[in-house]
Structure formats: structure tokens, C-alpha cells
Length: 351
Image (cartoon, rainbow, N blue to C red; front, side, top):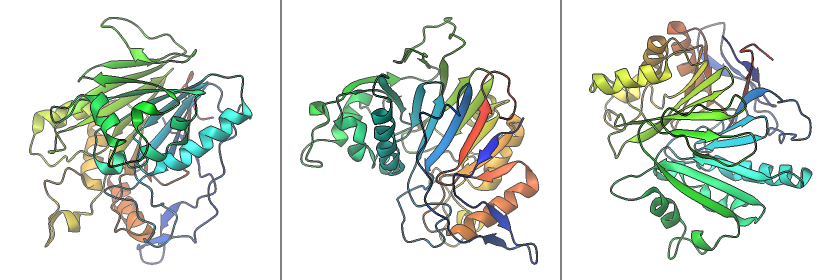
């Protein structure tokens, strides 16, 4: 099973044929906004990367093809919009969502936003997410309780004095915040809104279903992983995990959670040299491409997307990590801003 890849104006990274070193074509124009009125995504699950960096946003790194914004993934299915994480990439997504709302004023503006954890690179774009300031939008937040704090307090506390001039609880949008526990299932129905699915309850065929796995593979308070099902399409999002053999049971659970997914988006922040080098990154809560490949092979996924790139790596360095990973797992791609993956949600075929 493979995904259709839509570059959206970006140039793919490929190894240089002459000597095997990585090569990236010159940067290309910024991706164009999604056309909500085109109907081109009907009956397909569409995943679009709006931010792919880890740790912090980096406009300084050369090349421009991979992009410099931090974690944000958008998923569209029929009229449902699902967002995972609110790194700096969510700022541009929010502007695009405003354009879509203006183009379709009769449609309900419902968004589901899942947070994996509360580190700055996964939350820093939230205060600048335009739909928060628009009363037309109803935003359903889901995420884990962390470090003894309720999820609602984590999110609301990120936007309050003296840290930010606008208080989260005073925003004009409609918001609901729900804590997620390990194994919870989130239902996003076709008619809008989101809720926790009761044990034994089945999701309607036209709904998005999100399954959860809370893991301590990130040593600092843990992180929530997500498995999204739309019809027959299956995508797993596993960022901020370190798969180094220290916790075999946690790694086994991750592999089972990802089993059979059509695409696995997996943390691959560090090269092997940096992970084991003079200033080793062991224990930081992030993987290498080799670790991501091990999970992909064990889970027998269709495609592996390397994600959460280190802010120090330019396009050439990221492309070289992809080249190495592909030697062990042929269907590997590099997540980059503007890249879209599409899968027919009803028939699991290319569209």
C-alpha cells in the first residue's frame, strides 16, 4: 500500500547519483493554500505537513526545502479537519483555515486539535492560531494530563498573564478541552464535533477514529501517540519517542500500535553520529532514522515518513538521513512543509 505524494510546489530530496552524497534542488515557491471548494479531496484522507522541525523553529538553516517550522500536521477527511500539535507550523495553517471559512461561510467551522505533549516546540504556535480569535470556530482540544496538571490547565496556562497578553479563557471562539488517557478513542463524526468513544462502541463508517497510546519513550513526562483511521486508511503519528532498547515493553507496544499502518510518521531527529558522538543525544527522547526504520519494519507499515528534524540540519543533511534509511526500508520519505499524502479512504488505493 502506498500513498500518493503531492509536493505542493516543493522539490523532493534525492541522493546525488555521482557520489552517493545527498543533494537538494534549489528552493521553490511557498506551497499554495488548500482550495476547500475544489472537492479534490472527497473520500480521501489527506495528510499535510505544516511544520516538521523539532526543538525550535529555524529560519536560519540553508536550503528552504524541508522548512523551518515546528510540529504541526493537518488531516482532512470529507469535511472533518483534524490537527496534531500546535508548533509554529499551525500559524500558517490557521491563516489557511480562515481563508477556507470565508470561502464556505455556510459550513460549520469545527476543528479537532490533538496535542501529543506540552513541550514548547509543540505548543508555541497556539497563541497565534487565527481561528482562536474567530467566533465562527468551535475547536475541540484533546490531549494528556502531564506532570500532575490537567490538560485543560496546561493549555489555558500557556495563554495567560504575564506570558501572553490575551487570556485563553477570554477568546471569542468556542472551545472544549478534554483529557485523554492511554487507550482512549476519539470520534470525529462527519457532521462535526468530537467526543470520546465509549468502550465497545463502534465508529460510524464516515467518521474519523483516533486511537491513543501514551508512552514513556520520551523520558520527560511521556507523550501521546495517535493512530487515525478514515475508512480503510490508517496513519500513525509517533513523535518524541526514543527507541533505543532501554524499554522493550514500551517499544513492543509502539510496534503493535503502528502495525499495518499505511503510513507511519516517526521521530527521526538525530543522525547516528550526533546520537552517539562527542556530545551524545542519548536520553533526549528522540530517535535516529535507524530506530524509526526498526519500528516501521517491525510493524510492517506501508510507508515511513521521517519527522521532527533537528534544527541544525540543513536540507542536504536531512536528505542524507533519508538516503541511509531507504537502504534498510525502501519506502521512506522526508516530511517537509507543504508535502501532502493522499489515500482513498474507502478503497485503500492510490488517488
